[in-house]
Image 1: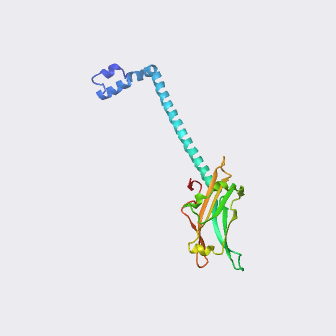
Image 2: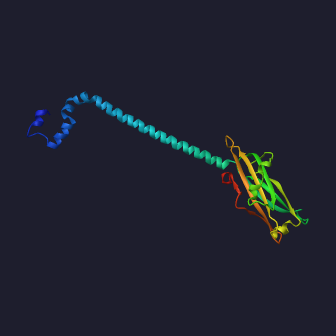
Image 3: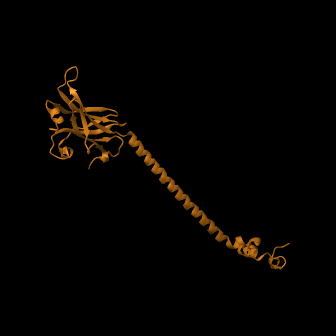
Length: 236
C-alpha cells in the first residue's frame, strides 16, 4: 500500500484529526520523500551548531570554575603551610633569687626569655626591653621612647631561646612593692622576619607585665590589659 496524499485524505483511512495535525507539523510527506533534509538541511546544521556552541560555552565555564576552586585550594594550602612552618617569637619574663643556693639570695634577678617556638628560623630579630619604676603615664608601655632604642639584629633558630637581663630588685624594693609604695613594670618589644615570607614580612611580639611580691618572699608578674600581643593583634 502506498502512503500518499490521497490515502490520508480518504474518509475511511484518514488518521484522527489530532494525529493529522502532528503529521502536518512534522511535514510527514517530506520525510517520506527525503525532501525534509533537502529543504531544511541548513536549518538543522545551524541548530546543531548552536547546540555545540552552547555546550562549548558550558564546558568553558565549568573549566574556569574548576580552575578557580583549584587555585583557591592551592592558595589556602600554601597559607596553611606557612602558618604551620613560620617562625613564632614568644616572650616571657622570669625572676629568681640571686645568688643561687646554697648562698642566701639578697636580690631578685629579672630576665627576659625570647623563644622561637616555630619550625623555621627567625631572622633580623631586634629586641627592645626595659624596666619602668614608678611611671607617671597611664600607659607606661606607650610612654617608652622605643625609637631611641636601637638593638643589633640577631637570628634565633627553631626551638631556640635566649635570655636578656632586665635588672635586679634588691634592698627595700620588694617591701615597698608589697606596701604599694612602688610600682615596677617590665616591657619588651621584639620585631623579626621569618624565612618563608617573600618579600619579607616584619612581625612583632609585645610584653607588658607588672612585678608583684608578697610577705612570704613570693614574686609574680601580672599581665597588663594591653601590649601582651603578637602581630596584628597589637595596638597600632
